[in-house]
Length: 93
Image (cartoon, rainbow, N blue to C red; front, side, top):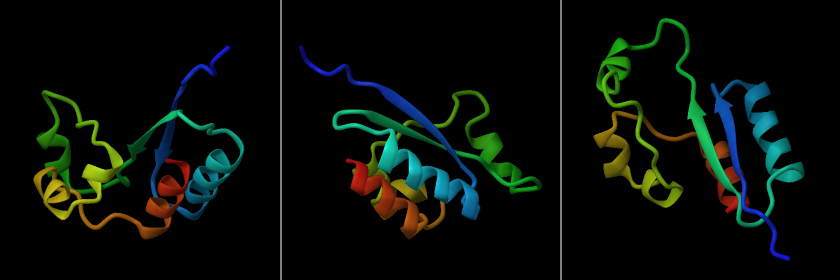
């Protein structure tokens, strides 16, 4: 019997508690072959241009290796990624 692959969603606002929750999920919940979807939660009062960018289509699903490329982040108007969270996600992949 093969293990069922799961999709796990994690909301991330980059606060210390959301980073701790991501680390906990990777250490205790995520299994080999699982798909992680990281949902970026914009802080209250953040730049409205992000909302307008994805208003009609929704935000893109970007694979981690592609997301790590500077050109990809520039295309979707995302600033430098949080190194701590990238390390957590790379550990899980």
